[in-house]
Length: 148
Image 1 (cartoon, helix red, strand yellow):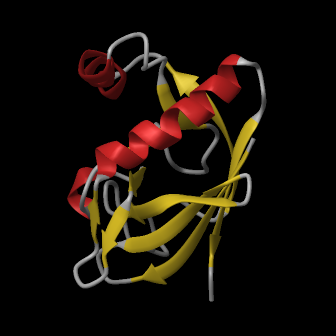
Image 2 (tube, rainbow, N blue to C red):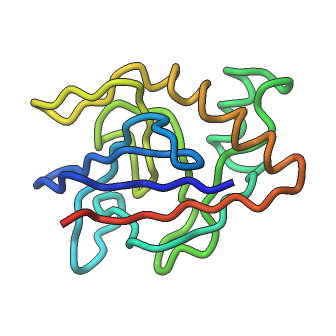
Image 3 (cartoon, rainbow, N blue to C red):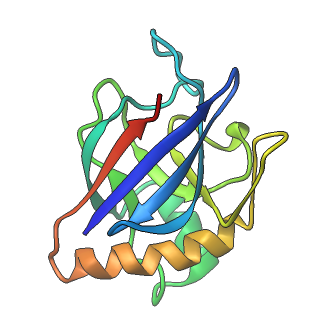
């Protein structure tokens, strides 16, 4: 399975994007802003291709298991081997304050203030596609590209 994230607007405090699954529109994304030098919790990850796996430990995993139950939630969507970053996840959130380098997803995007809307809905649509592919032992990757 291939996910593609196209970053289309890089602003002072956040980055807006569109996520595709197997070349089909899936949802909008929100990340921290670009910085030439990383500042923890305030910098988006670099463009590139990363493998996604299920992470079955950590606070997010515990909280999402409680929120969604073990039948739905099998582990966090975790991007492996991101240079100079740790524990990069795809998860629920509405503003850049809800991320420390992770990718937030939402069904709608407020174009004026960079707020993601219907984030839980988007996550609930995206998550089973990716987790089921992983549970079938498919390789899942995400390619992130900043559009000029």
